Length: 482
Ligand SMILES: *Cc1c(COP(=O)(O)O)cnc(C)c1O
Image 1 (cartoon, rainbow, N blue to C red):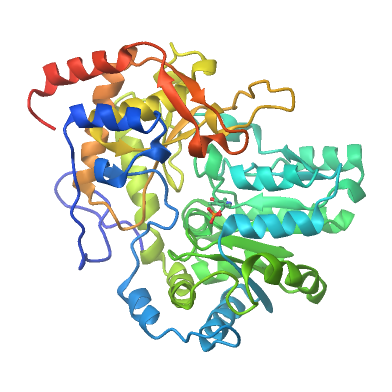
Image 2 (image 1 turned 60 degrees about the vertical axis):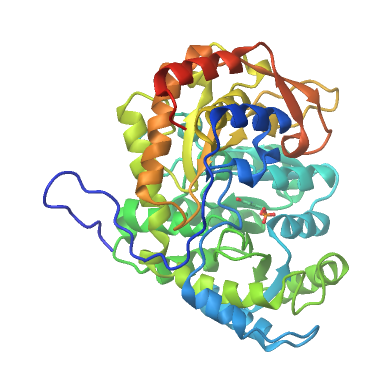
């Protein structure tokens, strides 16, 4: 679909769906929000939904399902082994990815656990465009080291590079020369690089990576969790492929991958996940891990309802009108913020809008977690829940030293087909206000810090009374408004 032009005034993204089920939202007063964020240890993961107005924490498992997905869930064929529902999904994977084997898993990280256990040995190197939190954790746990070789442009916060998620081919060759191909467990490509702003990777870049892997006999693993956005961007930003269908582009990507895995909480707007391959050898190697960790081979930890919804969701991913809403809303939000001078990652990517906390609150030192502080402040003044993607999301090194993230981002995910444009406008309005009052925001410090994946459960406290000052300013400017 090309963007629909408006005759009077600016075009806005036009939804190609209608809403037939609604859920009431709460916008609690700022006094309650102040309590709530402190009850949550200033960690937005620990907020309760009843205190949240717009939940922009993630796009994982919270995208709106279609009528067809819900209908399919009603006809699920429940059985431990041999369910017809599973065969439906297997057939859909064969049709879309052209892959013979599909191993179901309960979500994306379960696939990562299995792939890391099967392929990563002590001392192995795993080059990738960029890591995802759970990916890195599983590889590290198995003794491997990740090497992030995203193009330099990928780490620039403002840019007009259409594919900031590309992998640097020269650096890949450098790593292979340095360590030898036998030390490389596999090369991993991540669609829509999650942690650097949902930035896509180009099809040409993927093809180049494939060539290098062929040259050295290295396996290529593709993390397709954020494939839907990436497909949209290839079609809309990569001139060469603009006349290809989403289905054709998907097939080229699948053909160049040895193994595809994904989180179905994102891809296919359902729940679950899985690993696809054309290789009998790979299938046999991974099969027993599925039965050990996930479940029998015809459900792998997913309910049959989820499997039905996923089969339909994958089919709907092939329809540009079904996958364009996220990227178009995100682009609307990013462009409005950018025009108002708010530091935001450009160009707009998939997944959500990403505020650049390093610049937004440049007075907060990195050891006081600028992105975490911004997440806390934004919730406080708006009820909008985002996710810290900065130093808190990293882990300390073996000696307990803080590992400062390359970027300090506040991610505001855009769950698909969930928010209206007026809600997005509300979020933009409050972010602009917060930017004008940014000097009032202060840092955070850990009061309870778990060793693994600390961003999920860690609790922090403000380093000063900055939150009450922010509340006072809000009351002066907004009066009795929520
Ligand atoms: C979410 C995500 C995962 C992990 O998937 P879960 O279903 O949350 O376990 C892996 N890779 C990427 C790129 C993701 O975005």
